[in-house]
Structures are given as C-alpha cells and as structure tokens.
Amino acid sequence: MDRIRIRGGRPLQGSVPISGAKNAALPLMAAALLADGPLVLSNAPDLADIATMAQLLRHHGLSVEHDKAARTLTMSGAATELEAPYDIVRKMRASVLVLGPLLARFGRARVSLPGGCAIGTRPVDLHIKGLEQLGAEIEITAGYIEARGKLRGARIIFPQVSVGATENLLMAACLAEGETELVNAAREPEIGDLAMCLMRMGARIEGIGTDRLRIEGGAPLLPATHPIVPDRIEAGTFACAAAITGGQLHLDGARLEHLGSVARVLRDAGVDVAETHTGLLVTRRNGLRGADVMTEPFPGFATDMQAQYMALMTVAEGASMITETIFENRFMHVPELMRMGARINFHGSSAIVRGVPKLSGAPVMATDLRASVSLILAGLAAEGETIVNRVYHLDRGYERVEDKLAAVGADIERLAG
Ligand code: UD1
Image 1 (cartoon, protein in one colour):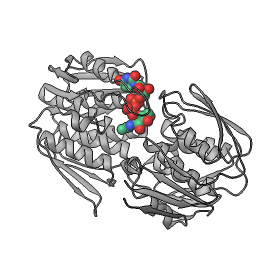
Image 2: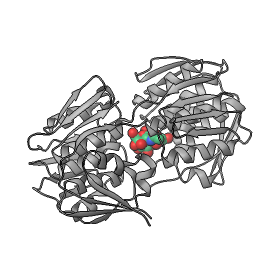
Image 3: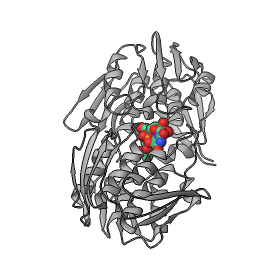
C-alpha cells in the first residue's frame, strides 16, 4: 500500500485549487436514479469514493461516464437492477443514498445495510423511519433493507439531524405524490447543492438552506447540468495547512459561508481568514492560541474538520478542549499525534490538547479519512520525517493531496508499494 513521506518545517505559500465536494457529489450521483437523464455534473472530483458510487450506479444499470480531463460526470439511463449489494455498500456507507431514489422511482429496492465503520456504529434508522412515513413497507432481512410501496408526501420530523437521511428523504420526496415537509433537516451546504440540482431537474423545493424543506413531489424529473459545490472540508484542511506551517494560502473557489463556524474558530486561534473575489486567503503571521471547539451539525463546527483542527492545536500556545458530539469513536488520530510528541488527554468524547513548541516526525497510520489527513498536517509542522501509512483512506476523499501540498512548497511525496 502507498505511503506518504513528509519532511516538515516549511511554511506553505501560494494558491491551492479546491476541488468539487465529495460529500456533494455522492448524493448528486444517486439523484441520477430519479430520472432517465442525462444528468451532467461538472467540477467532479477524481476520488476513490466517486469511482465506488459510479460502480454502484453501473451495477444498477445506468451508464456513467467520468471524463477526468473535463471534470464531468454524466449519468444516463434507467435502473434495471434494484439491489445494492453488500460488496459495494460495505466499501462506502454513502451507497445507502440509492435507497430513497430507487424506491421512489420503481416502488421497490433492496439495499445492503452498511454496518458500522471506524468512527462509530452509524445506524440508518432515520432513513428507514422517514421512508416508512412516506408510505414504504420496510423489512430488514439477511442484512438487507427490503423496501416497497408507492410513496406519498408526508410531514417528517427528524428526531436528530442527519445529513444522509435528509438527502435520502429529499430525493425520495421529489417523486412522492403530494407535499412533503422535512422538519429538523440538516443544513449542510451539500444539501443545498443537492436541492439546487433537483430543482434544475424540475423538482419544486422550498426552504433551501433552512432546517425545514418543503417538496411538492410527483412530477417526473428531467435532464440537467449542475456544477458541484467546492469542497468546504478540503478548504478547511488547507486552511489548517497554512496555519500549522505559519504560511499563507489562497484557497481558489472556497466559500466563507460554507465554512460555518470553522472560520470563526480559526480566527479565535489567531489565523487570518479573509474573503477574496475568487476564494479565501488564509494567513498565519503570529503564534497560534488554543481555542475550544465542539462539533455540531452545520453551521456548527464540522466533525469532518475535528481531526485537522486537533493537529493544529497540538502546536498552539495554551490548551484547547475538543469535544466530539456527532460520532462516538472519532479520536483515532489521538494516539498517532501523541507518537509525534503531542500532549493530549482524552476521556469519552472530549480531548484536552496542550500545545507543544514542536512535534517530531514519526511513522504513523490512521484508519479513517480525516484522521489520515490530520497526520499529514502534523507532519508538515514536525521536525524531521513523517511517514503516513495506509494512504488508501486519503484517496477516498482528497484529490492528489500530496501534489497540491508540494505545489505550495511542502516537502512531500508518495512512496509506492
Ligand atoms: C455525512 C458525511 C460525513 C460527515 C457526517 C456528519 C457524506 C457522504 N458523509 O455522513 O462525512 O461526517 O455527515 O456531518 O456526506 N444517525 C443515526 N441514524 C441515522 C443516521 C444517522 O443515528 O439513520 C447518527 C449518526 O450515527 C451520527 C449522526 O446521526 O451520529 C449524524 O450522522 P449523519 O449526519 O447521518 O452522517 P452521514 O450522512 O452518514
């Protein structure tokens, strides 16, 4: 398996192009199941998770073309196979996003239960309950969700905010007869992006950007072209890279309003985040200060930025308390950061990070995407050489992260094998 070698200590300087968001692209691809298409997505990132979703859609019978040079994804055709098999779903939990569209369009679907993952148990009960409220009959048998029924609009009140359940229900509601209201819906920018794409396909949706979405469903959806929103988590990660190295990066295409409280927290920590005409300029001139965070649904501090922020706090002056409220097991980066000299105590869902003047390079490994990139950030600031093993996780969510970092001055390379 590939590894990444970093020699730390160089301040990063320059411009980084921010790719289309993985977490927007995956539901947008699933939305292609709602219509014959073609659905053309521009600004598509080239990532392992995108290839997995393309594989799943092809398995369902769609034609999927990924023109990597043009950065477009084109999906067309109607699904002929209504089962999403374990072999694909277990590779990527977001596969469960095909459930709502398949059921809404064809009256039945059989989708493998995704199961847990490294960061927690991650149930899909909210997806299932919501679809039942739209009239589906759902049984769990042999590890599969078996759903059938003709969907009709309903008022669904989510007991807890869920990005995936909001997306599944939003897509299903577009083809359910009558009006659906989603209350306590997730407000992540990726949901707004999905809603905009569905509107381009002819759906009628109100309340975009709020926690209350109203959908007037039932009309068939049509071909459309839609640009994928820039990746706010990639932008936040590069903002941390500028900050941890004491450098300055322009994040081309990044949007301040999509960072939610990540921008505020970075400013509290002594990092300058300024809007420009084409993106964000992130600069760190003086020392970093410890600042507390608690992860929350958008616009709160993103759980997908928690590991990167913790890496930053390992070299800040003073202490910071980092509390994870979304996933129960999302501190796998802690022991690895400690191997690099970080001072962290954690108990349950909170970690206290006491900043140290310098980290030292070490061989490290992580078992999820954001944890892996936090180790790269730590490596950029550390004295000496860091080897990040198992970069498979990185490739799921970051497009050529080592090339983008090398282009702005990092001493970083991928070691094959
Ligand atoms: C999405 C993102 C992921 C991000 C997460 C939270 C994608 C592809 N992935 O994941 O990167 O970390 O949002 O911002 O967009 N829950 C239930 N029952 C359910 C569904 C969720 O209990 O049916 C719980 C989860 O276990 C978790 C919380 O709700 O504790 C939030 O999960 P959710 O927002 O659904 O995350 P995902 O959509 O899986």
